[in-house]
Length: 185
Image 1 (tube, one colour):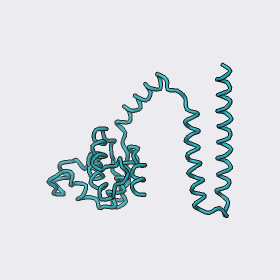
Image 2 (spheres, rainbow, N blue to C red):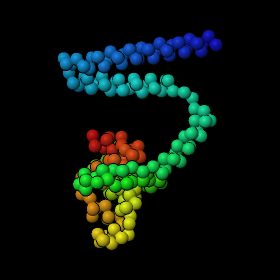
Image 3 (tube, one colour):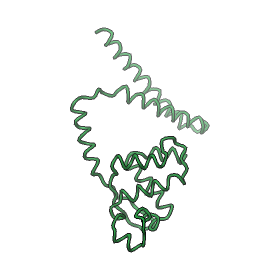
Image 4 (tube, rainbow, N blue to C red):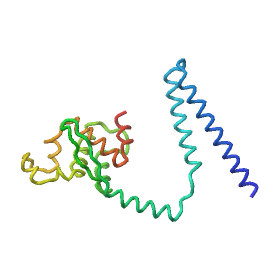
């Protein structure tokens, strides 16, 4: 029992030390005499320290937590997001894709390795946009814009800039936006 108390106190001291270090690092960053590359390194270190702190302070999952997570996952399946399309000066409604659809698109894009080029992203974004937007799947719309393959609907309506913007918004919506940022950088 004594060991557990000392372990808790040690973690508490470590947590205080990390918080103090983060505070000092933030003060150093606002100093105008510090070179920008050093400031960037300090910011990255702060991020890492904050991640460590959040992990140390996390609680153990309970049965209720697991049930709540399951319920939230079920609710998330029906989420929708309105995405503003600048060239139309209007919004379109997009629904969250099923996991199978998302995995298929991610595999096609090759997102897992992080070495993706924009030219490899665009076909995946087109497919994602089409499958997530019920309006684009309307047969009457497809007849009106004269597409044979329904997936061509996106290309007929949107230019490359629109496709990239909508695609990035959708990736954020499905919590994959960090993968897109990694590719862009």
